Amino acid sequence: MKLCFYDTPLNKYSVTALLGAMESRPWLFEEIGVLFFSSARELLEREGELRGGGQVVLAFSFFTSQIWEIHDMLEELRPLRERLGAVCVGGGPHVSGDGERTVTVLGFDYALMGEGEVSFPALLEKLLRGEDPAGMQGLCCRDHSGKLVNGGIAARVEIEDFDPVSPRFRRYGPIEITRGCPYGCAFCQTGSLCGRRVRHRSLESIREVMERARGLFKLRFFRALTPNALSYGSPNGVEVNLEALEGLLKMLREVLGEEGKIYLGYFPSEVRPNNVTEESVALLRRFVCNDDLVIGAQSGSDRILKAAHRGHTAEEVYRAVDRLHRGGFVANVDFICGLPGETEEDARLSVEMIENLAARGAKINVHSFMPLPQTRYEKEMYGKLRQSYIDLIRRLTPQNVVYGDWVQQGALARKMHRYLSEGIL
Image (cartoon, rainbow, N blue to C red; front, side, top):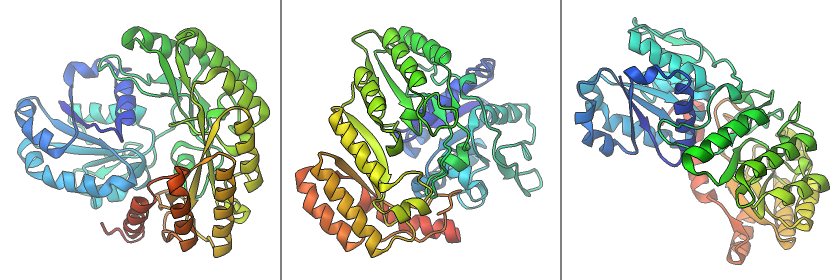
């Protein structure tokens, strides 16, 4: 088999995780050759490498915002797929939430739904043996008779059972230290796709990965992948476990040495406002090298925050920003404009909060609401950027206070709403 990964900056973390999972079954590489491509043209130019090597599998992991480019790429690759008898496997956030239309509308042969550390290698094994994988948990596809079979979401895994790095392919990214989120925010996929039970990678596992990565890659830094950087070690993911968090940071400093860089609370690991306490800020200040921390505020309206199940209030956002400022950090605060149900009054409260936070030294990342599959807001109308937001952005942008891709997101939101509500690309 020749396994070809679509590999771009947007999905590189997913590819690395899947390669790490495959390395838990090293015999797979005795029968599978792996290559990477970043465009249809690149793959077409490498057609010679794909001939005579058995079955060709094209693997894509992608977000809902990417479905149009992925669909167009599959169409461009259709002649190559037909010449080689190649099959296409889709996975990632969009596919996990919209598996059936990944097959029926986007044109994939197989849609892997949910966590792929077990289901992806299992699918490859079945394809190698020539078995019909239809009915496998975590997979949606057509069986040999052409009937669409949905095997449901994949079983949850314990993340420390799988390597987050790929020594074979010398790939290293942020280490996932926690998976799952207890809050279930109405606009976010994390709770539905990864579950609301938090699963932490143990200190021993993180140490082993870090020491191995330091030997393999001369690693001198650490970045965490987690839905909430201050939830590490918390049994429920809500309260801060300062002892566990300090244990993590001390271990990282020990492994990396005094010259090593520890990034926590910045992309791809934000912090929740309700977890920003004087103690947690002081702990981060002792160990991390990033001066900015990302906070998910999302709205200045308590009514909207409650409707979205955010689990914090507007006042907690203010307190968090003040505590970070006193602790020597710059707060980068995320806001989502146009959340479902937002009124002029709700928008006014968000605008007021943004102005107040900017005056306190915060930076503001403005997003437009975009509907996502398997969320409570999946079929809600995209939010139009109100004039009050536009006026605010124009006023604060010259001050280098506001940033974000709200214009592009607003255009995408219209297309995403049409697709998720009507199935029309």
